[in-house]
Image (cartoon, rainbow, N blue to C red; front, side, top):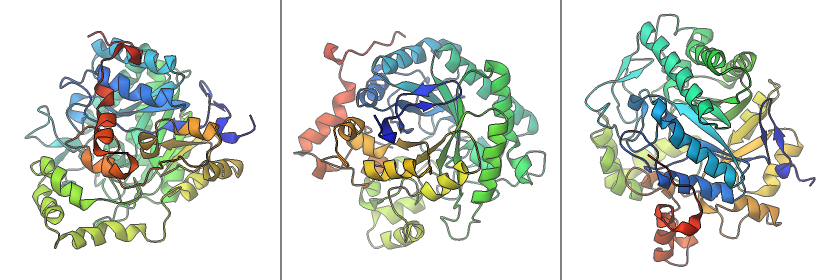
Length: 445
């Protein structure tokens, strides 16, 4: 009972039974129209049964044109409320809270669906996204204000569905980041220039949500502590930690209940998720993205031909030198926690119970969010509760789950962790089961 990992975390309007959150991660589980499926319920309930205190949903767009991949559930329609309600009920029945992450891609996508194919995506800027080359069009002031209303309406739907809270995805290169980042935002209107102006869109969304759902519905904000935008060496570095501390304080002042601290102005990023990047697998899966951006074919050639891979490997891995995998963003989370009075959740390769426990005892964070280590071991929290410091078959941080995502089911692809390849595939396919003994409520569409 004295282990800080297993102490309840009390927010202003929400209590979570322990300090472990399943971070936002998902696959192509859902339907083309944005409605969620039974497969998504099966996926989320795996982690709830495994002992996490709360699940932060995958990236959930507030508009259909905000998807990063077609086949991701959205919350852009009122008639989707009962579907999300069923998911929330299933997760809570398995012992966890469910927090819906509200998002819009802006210029950062993977596989555009039919609703945003052959058109430029709305963004803070008209400059193409530099890594993949997604084409964009800067939103007018009126379009920004309509987007604010879309986020507020989506928050209302989440509340009506009886979910436990929402998170605004203002990190990792998505639409909020495109406004926040000094390396991306090149506007000259009231949404560009100074840090206050660049933060205006995010702050207006928080204020609009509070006006719409009131002050008693949990709202947290995910921020990139530092942009590290110069993944391509000729790009600017972007926002500093000091910039983000100021934004975090503004979010708190407007009614945010917690902050979820990440890093990087794009996703994936060399520091998020930390670990390897298996280019030989990207050579097989990246072809799905060749036509998605104007630089897709260039990237595919670097992945496809071994003689070209060192170019990309140098560019990608140079930022990782001297940085740990576990707790890669801990120093930044500590600095933000010292500057605010609301709880801070840190993400970044966490897997070792004693490491997390030590960070909590030193007051460096209030909770951790975990994706890959929980994908590898859905029952990681239960293993810690049973006395294990690390799981028997730990996550290797190979990131094969990440690079398989554009074409294949979400799950662990590190074959060495399984007794056989068949066992690995059986685990990947388990979320598609319709067996009655799963005891998961069916979605009625």
